[in-house]
Image (cartoon, rainbow, N blue to C red; front, side, top):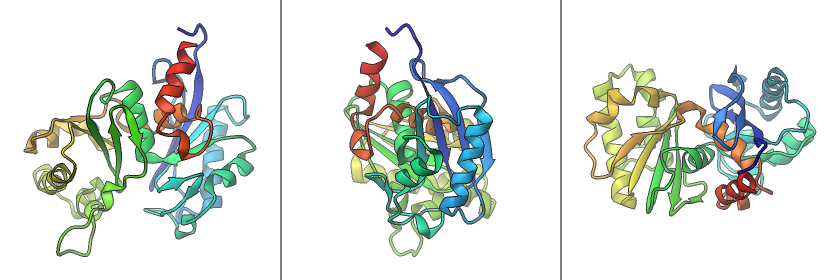
Amino acid sequence: MATKAIRAVGVDIGGTGIKGGLVDLESGTLISDRVKVATPAGAEPADVLAAVRVVLDTLGVADADVPLGVAFPAIVKHGRTLSAANVADTWIGFGAEKFFEDGLGRDIHFANDADVAGVAELRFGAARGVSGLTILTTLGTGIGSAMIHEGVLVPNSELGHLQRAGHDTDAEAYAAYSAMERERLDWQQWAERLQWYYSHVEFLFSPDLFIVGGGVSKHADQFLPLLDLKTPIVPAVHRNNAGIIGAAALALASDGTDAVAGAADTLVEATTA
């Protein structure tokens, strides 16, 4: 094993908050306080960049000495954001990775937020050593998803946008944690919506394991026992820190989403060199 800990910074940009921390990539743990600021109203690129700069300044890692990975709630391909769930439409087709690199004066790795949470669980959490197909979902402002098959991440699955037959709204509008808060549902009422969602995903993909992440996963005992599924379903080990940890892990990848699938192997090689 390496004698010196490998560290990187992970920043997780969400629809309501931006979180960051310094991560030890041998243990997959935060070695700093978790810093959180509100996502700016409207979530325009320049405003989000300014908020990320505040997070880095607060952590004391504004220079380029420590690798930086950024998780974002959008489809990300080759450093460009191709969707805009819960952020401004100006992110659609936007060169986000270069914009952040230019604005921060450092190389970064920019990836989908649910995918990086999947990387965290694959490398350090509930998906580690699991064979077959694992599907991680993050329940928050929306529903993010990460699909991991035989230890390899298949990026940008976007299973939160599955359509409900006969309805105008998609899965996340109906079953995300934000829907529970917005409509003041109790755990049982929300679990009925989650039952529809996970049963539908189970029918489509026949996974071997579901992992539930996001901040609400700390209350997993309130709703997971209410679900009736053929597939085992467990809370994420890293819960609401998975985005930070996964983004930090991907900071070691060489470039863009082409590196996502091999990021876990890259990390293993780096930490055992």
